[in-house]
Length: 121
Image (cartoon, rainbow, N blue to C red; front, side):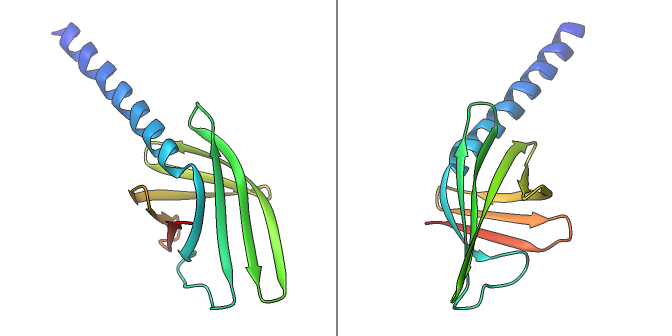
């Protein structure tokens, strides 16, 4: 009985790790926010993310916010763990629940319940 319980526990951890790795592979690349922190960007605004994964479920990248007269670039560190995406942007951490992820679209919810939708750029 103990060996069955140990096997189930090991399989659970393996599947959780592989799911995090799969999400990390899919998030890699350039993304444009069609909804950001609960609101649609104005027509003259644009929010883009670049994620560069590493093999440990973590990565770095950039967030670029631009409007008609300015462009702000922020460094991003991120990690994926148990259906959560944590991004550290300019020394502030934001934790998102990963609701859905495909090769072309990521749907996230922050800890305030606001949606962020990223589409492959």
